[in-house]
Image (cartoon, rainbow, N blue to C red; front, top):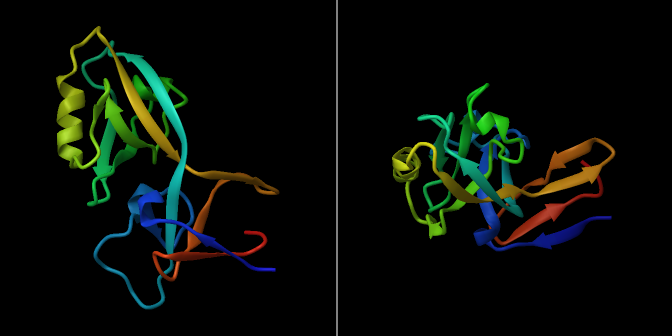
Length: 157
């Protein structure tokens, strides 16, 4: 049995091309072919993380989707951010120290994070991509969408 899942484009964090995984190397860009599949990664759980900037570098790479959402593209192994297991690749950065950054480009977000003073705490508000729990364990909910208005959802993936 097939059901229709209606969602607003405002719920989409980013899209990946030809993979349902959170793969920052497969982000949807300007090139798409007729045989490509687009997977939408939608907003999931909100997280608030308090961090003490004990090092000059946080050890993360920021990117954006071109429509106002900056998110974590990479986390360097052994870095400060790597030691905080609640922060994940694919998380959308919603605010830094209470300052809303929606609408900012990735380089502005990176600059803001770099300008934070060493040995001072700061807070990130993040939104992780929605996850589903099924027979394959914890997987990201990514539905191939033929239009922004309606995603078709099958029984199992």
